[in-house]
Image 1 (tube, rainbow, N blue to C red):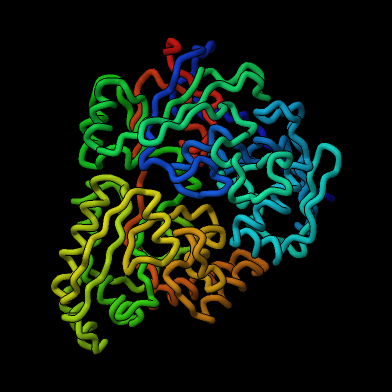
Image 2: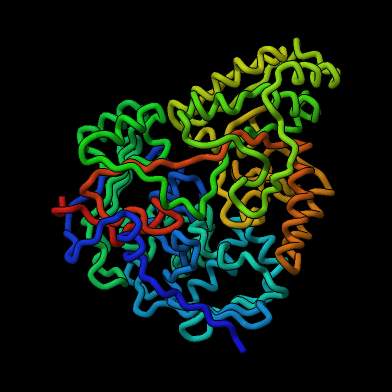
Length: 523
């Protein structure tokens, strides 16, 4: 007997319940004004998994499914899915009458191409999962069948994380995928169509008149404004020129003040699938960072509670390990690195490193005031260890390129533990992902055969109890080696104006399509 999985709720109803707004006749028209912070390096999240790219591209390109705020899978381009009793066959029935933005019909062949050819070439992380677990991906009429070699529990999370949208086969097949001109003007199935990108100023999207959901979207368009300065972003929100500020768009010092404005709302909802953690990536190829005692000393020298309280103004909590503490895969018994300068100095002495000859480059991406303060704090915090730190700040695209090319000693980054650590956190640690493709790979050069073996075992584990035990062993190992230094678990406060309705609809939050978002009064 086959286990049937049916999505029971429409996305719009989830958003109405979450925001507390429900109007019988949503207003039509108007332009939603948002912020692209930082300006994205690209606008197709099928190719670039940058947070700003996802924010923009999520309105253009769509995935097979998504997740509600209670982490139940819900339909997008797949209307339903069936899973065989042995967990080795997934059949996704697709939505009817869906068109690409250029008018071509969306089909099962697009899905087969996307997951059978496009992502294996674009994303080495996905390619390894495909090679290890997928027997075949095939079209069957209006459905796509994923046949697995063995059960793979995180499959729905893999397809529904919002990170792997479906791309149009007819525009990509036979081309140089990474340099295809479509990447600059993406063509999707979403409610909004790419219109214009004026570098340094804005990215404009317009309403898709042929959207496959009847009578949607409500908005005429969306403009993502490029406003590099946090104070200017806050002022634009105060004036009403900007309708929404994501976590990080406003300086964390301004969040409470902006939330208190008339007609302003604050919510931390909508990030249920994205358990965020900030960490310090340590290039273990470069001495003295190749010495584990130096890495442990750096961890002890950073006052992470101070970082949370005074740099991010209470928006988060101290990280407890490689895996986010609120998830079932973190071991609460994990030993902790408390702020202890004397212990840090002792570890430096034990390491045998002459720190008087060391200068470390801290590559800082342009993410806003709090991250700039964090970089400066780090420079000061490591001085008592004799470590000189040179802060090198660059724009988003340059940071992305330099980090991807391993051109750094230290750099701050963060990721979202999308449900299962195997689908996200693993890429930062597994030796097979020592790649010059993305800052979200193993750019620190960490190699540990024992850790690699544990990652493989946890993916193949037959039951949840076994998986948790393996994850505990793995987290203890990573906690000792510290190729990434966990700093804090991120909270993402969203500020939005009263007229914005149905904003936070799913567990992937502001990266969603916005097909049922509207402005009260249509302006």
